Image (cartoon, rainbow, N blue to C red; front, side, top):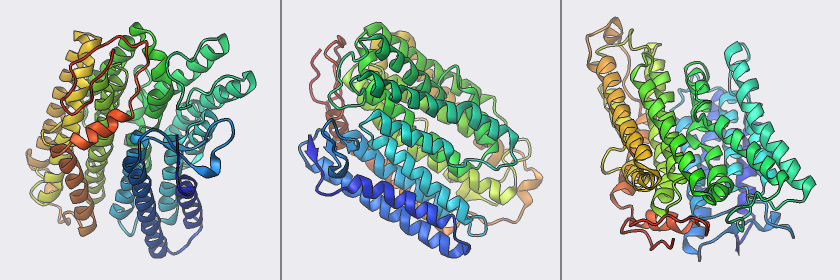
Length: 486
């Protein structure tokens, strides 16, 4: 365990939370936009500093000195979470920059920064109570218009209950005196008492609900098609609930090989379900939700594989999917702002007035399905290698899910941008603005750069994966990975 030279994690959370709360009270839209860009940029720089300190060090857990209690630290990062922190900041900055000036209200900008703070808190939490507190904060931050009955119901049925389950689990851990399942030293089976099994069940139920895994996948499409896309996309694509699977639940699941196989089947089933549903969508926002569901299933498959290659692939795909899906969502949002619709039945031939937007949609759509030469491709390849050890079924479902999702992207792109010309294709609208081109270009460079030279990232993520001693799988790992001991 290493100590950060300053309370950088506390500063990172306080910066976004405080700045966001202050911006929501501002009245000048132009000034609030400048402050929001400055806050998101500072958080990106601070997150990059934390990642650099972790990557240059000796590995292991780096804890925040301000919240390092005598029992165990409350905030810390390892090689996986240290990379996720700047990725979340980059996602937030991308949304703030690409929001049009006339629509970027102080409330919207402030909420994005506060959501970023809750996501950072969940990714840096090494204590279940801290994680639960941040999850509750994310559920309480407004994600929808007060007049939308469907999204108010979603908040009551999914967001708040999912966070409440974690709060109950944290309370049981404290009252029963159990070892905290999110501690860095929690390797192997930690649920050895009836109270521990209750905690495990509550955490697993919350993870399934918040990620939208089968059979809780129903809320993703409803949320994406109705709510404010920047807020929902930030929370969904960051996949904070997956950190609970990687940090705590995975050790217990991998203690029993059959449990790991069942978790792989659950992830693969979710991925193929998302791909099949993507093929039937007639609205680009619902298509985006199904693409996210496919990627979430693939990440869960990798993290649950119980082998080094699969776990590393899950972490790498997590990074790549967060950025590629963000780019895809920005293009969908831009199309909606220009034409007032994302319904494929009302679109057609809009690639003529919007050639750059058409290209951006195709590129990010294919990137999210594992386009060779990108970070998603490397992650997918390692996930496949891990899934095969859970059985031929999960591996085939994972491969088929990516193939079908690529078909769904090509189908949607053809119908919207190069299909028969609809009245919307004759609209005189501007193509991608300079800010949008800058953000999308930065995302492309990041995904391609890491995809073409993934060796350092693979070895970095491998140091963050510690498989329990009970795991019995062995695997001929990727050449960039260190040797795995059964």
